[in-house]
Length: 128
Image (cartoon, rainbow, N blue to C red; front, side, top):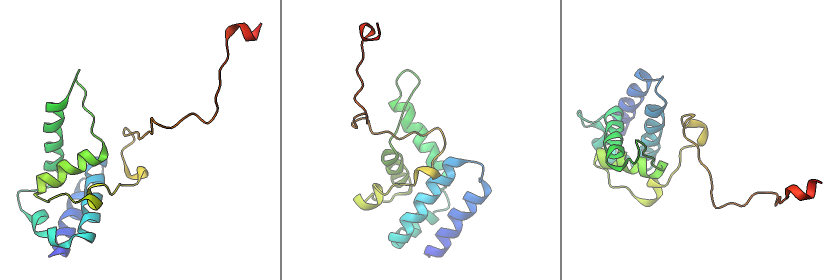
């Protein structure tokens, strides 16, 4: 059964190869199936698709938005996908990250808690 689920995901990814979001979510689901083959049946549900899982994310974003903007962390987005497919998110799978290179160009990850490499402080008076 996992093989059928993999083929279903790969088929949708191939049909939508220009959509980077389907590629990222599909890749995540393929990784999940490697570790959790017992969830193949849930992915095989005929009414469940990667595209429709993105629609679920959009619905959640509409609820969360402020000033026409809503942002999910990758983990939050993948949790929505897992919930859509009826898969209970486990800690190792839910936090398993997709490589940054596989993410769409519009997604930027940053660590706001890191300090700048150089401590630079100058005043205008110092230049005279």
